[in-house]
Amino acid sequence: MIKNEEIEKVIDESQQGSTLALEKDEKNGRKLYIESYGCQMNFSDSEIVASILAKEGFNTTQELEEADLVLVNTCSIREKAEVTVRKRLEKFNAVKRTNPGMKVGVLGCMAERLKSKFLEEEKIVDMVVGPDAYKDLPNLIQEIDEGRNAVNVILSKDETYADVAPVRLNSNGVSAFVSITRGCDNMCTFCVVPFTRGRERSRDPQSILEEVNDLWEKGFKEITLLGQNVDSYLWYGGGLKKDFDKATNMQKATSVNFAKLLELVARAQPKMRIRFSTSNPQDMTLDVIESMAKYDNICKYIHLPVQSGSNRILKAMNRLHTREEYFELIDNIRKIIPDCAISQDMITGFPTETEADHQDTLSLMEYVKYDFGFMFAYSERPGTLAERKLDDDIPEKTKKRRLSEVIELQQQHSFHRTQQHLGKTEEVLIEGPSKKSDAHWMGRNSQNTVVVFPKENYNIGDFVNVKINECTSATLIGEAIGLSGNN
Image (cartoon, rainbow, N blue to C red; front, side, top):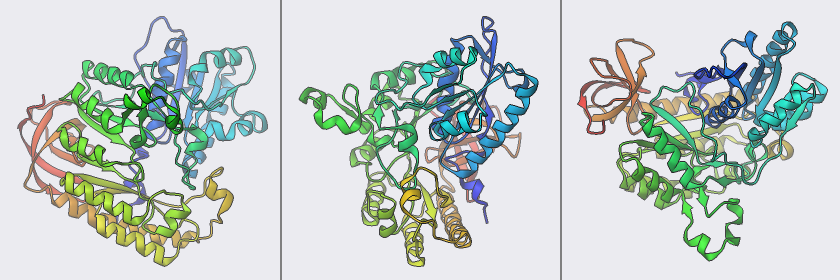
């Protein structure tokens, strides 16, 4: 049976704690060491931070000991990430004792939540910067240079970083993330995001198109439009999503929703692959699915977190959809895009979950038969509504057993789904060498399934037609037939 960590692809374990490195600017005299933890949003934010600090005289370094400024971009979603970050801060402070000029700062979601603890009680950092305050970094750095602690965790109603061109770091040069929204208005009781990233606001579509076009010029072949909840993207000239009803008739008439944005991006670069993440069942509308069906370059894959198959638990989680509405959405996806892959997020052992609720989750999985999933046992997060209002009353042993049953069923479904690709020829975008064999390339098909095939004389970034001959529950194995028409 597969281990839990191997399935957690939303928070990519292989990337956790990785450091950024970009080209040196000879004019810059100071060194920045930046580590990132958590979701893709955080890795994308680190690129924005590096871009802002490059203009302030900082080159990146991967040598902690030589850094003038050490930043750790943090995550509050799971306890594991917080424990890791605390250990890293202890390590940074040990280095600081031999290099007293070094300054340490915490960025991101954990910063917002633990600002007073880090700065005043434990005195382990010089600077705390929330996810909406990165443009204030030059001022904050000046404060710490002058010997004062610096903090800015104010959540903004309008910051989208549309005018900061992120520096592409740690990239394979093939695929890149493009942030389209920030914040979230969905108050799911288990989630800390609305408190750490603020209210939902969307980025100007023009700035998104400019970034996509710029990436194409730089040789990127695939982008992922990124947001806490991409389906609720809504641009009407700026402002919060919740204030849309106060917009003028003209603003409403010329507004751009997610389906329209997808079409704009797909048309702007017809040979570039378009992905998006993450969707929310309550906000995903039919026009999004129809836009996906209309354009070949929009990948046929939807990450559609459900969290539980029980209506009672969905209500306790404040998920604003029912099991039946979720099934209706799945049926529509299957009808409009028959070959669409669907993946899930699932939480086991949420407060008050009974055996019957757990069986509802398993039966929902049987109905959908997801291609893959990201599965977790519930871990109470400080500051969430669930922590304030619900007892974490399911024994750890029960949570783990239910989790292993969910993972085991997902394994069967994943194998069922990969088998459906056997004998087909599918377009694969080469991302890099296979982890297991240097003689093979690894890439993904439109459905986001990993495909491995012999290298021959193909290169990273090529679109290749691959005949699928074998599969495991997670990987397709095949042979290249030739370049596709997308090169």
